[in-house]
Image (tube, rainbow, N blue to C red; front, side, top):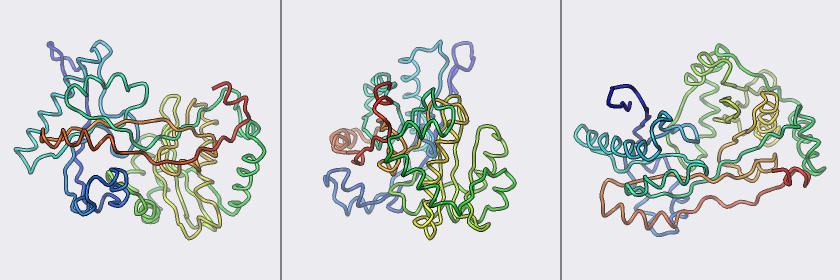
Length: 339
């Protein structure tokens, strides 16, 4: 917590300690992203502790918040000093922190993080967040489909046809609890394929979300003959629908288009919820663009504890490149003209 001179709370920050080894990253992918400048052998020996200001399990600016009476510059400077103090205290208590990281900044904040760059933080681009803008004329899912060109509208209808044997329903907290073991299994199926792991959750977390946030947390279960074969989770916050974690039984995914069905349903849920934006998140960028998602750039900030290593890090970061993909344009031209 941050307090003013009268000891009134004026800000808050959330910090997590993450331990990264070669088990949490795809070494080959990281080697490629650094432009082969770091030996693959060195990356395979990676063992670092990172102090993360932000939410390891959610994309976006969830690390800190200050009162509007506090200027942006003052807020960022105090945040930087607080993180440095925490890093110092952690060094005394344990082995120490290798680096401090702040994640993830939207384009509207790019100018505001300049003050942190003067505090010796380096910025770098990470994979884009795929975002669907929900247009005002989409009062129903049919309105959304009608704004698509024939090719993509046929594709979406084909997904529902292919997944006709799959029934999707929103699960209550108790139903999540009852299916806990299967949910964990499906979640780890997806997690094991990820290039990076900031951490991992379990079904108990989803149960608590559903129990404490029944109006704002949506957990969709997908069944074939009463067998749970997939799930998606998402949050509604204000005018934004934020897709979160998924779980899939890959033995059924190809024949029943389970993941694509989830994406369709997330669009439908967003329209029904009356939000302005659906944030699909990272991964499967090209597929998500088929549903109208556009790439939005995101930035991270990082600072190494060692001044010399930090200077080297600044050089290396310029060589990090987000995933490349070909974007699809599923809507009629008038939609893009209005954007």
